[in-house]
Image (cartoon, rainbow, N blue to C red):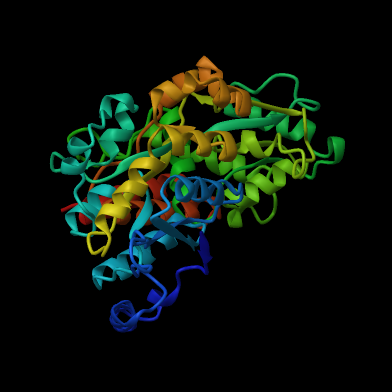
Length: 435
């Protein structure tokens, strides 16, 4: 396995991307070192190289997963292309690359909200024939994750791991997880400064996809929706206003860092495992890093629970990543072998035990190795959270919807506009975007 630098050339221009692709094609034909068939003398089986792209992985599990795959498939080598942590930046770089028909990336991880857009844009390889050929039973996966990879009645992505927001807390400071957002504010204020902490609570408030996820959790916990089952924009409601109002209160009540508007998942993780905060909202993987003897300063002091409730109960946004194949790949067979293995039992076992990623295969929640490495996954309450997680809107125009939410929620959090104004702006702009 070779790890490549972050995938940035496509930010320059589509023309540059096409030039690079052309040069790459020439290199392939003349013996370049990427995407070539390494033919030995006589009987040696050819070795093909594929490039796999995903966001930054702080757990180190990606390298272990790739190594295990290469050990089991000596004729396929995988180059790991590390993308930016921000899913929005990943999305934009993929779109720029694939719209220019680049074959530099063969396999890529996709946020659960991307498959419909990428399928409609003709960026992805359809997987139904391959799934049927290899006898893969999609019923083995959580239904919501399979559905996230469908568009137009066809399967475009395989479920890799799933996420749902959780509340983490310091058990040496907070004896019982707060059950409501008001209780969270009180617990954060009371615990802030104790046992070396600096902050009461951290979440993802930077202007990126993570902000959308957090905002939907607040809005849904008060009974609000963004888009209904008929694809009608319904965010302008008293319930949505109450949810966003509570989010603004949480961010501005003195329990979060002054730079909370720069926080994404890694900043949240660092603040918690470094012992800087009493409570944190993050994905399931942080249960693994919180128990890491080499990294964590809060060993044996980590509790986790469902997110606090609003008027309508607790709500966790469905997150996670799918794996897709670039339509323009030169190595579709090798790419599929990697996708099939990585999203199958062997690959997901490594992602769960080494990376703390929640499997999309239902049977792995009964696996002793998984439950030992990540005790959270053995808890019925957590599995129930996954089953009931709130999906983000499924639409080929999702990125437009996401951008609107990010901009308006950011304005509300900085008090440039009121929550009421932000909600009304979202309603109007989404209706225009989805016409």
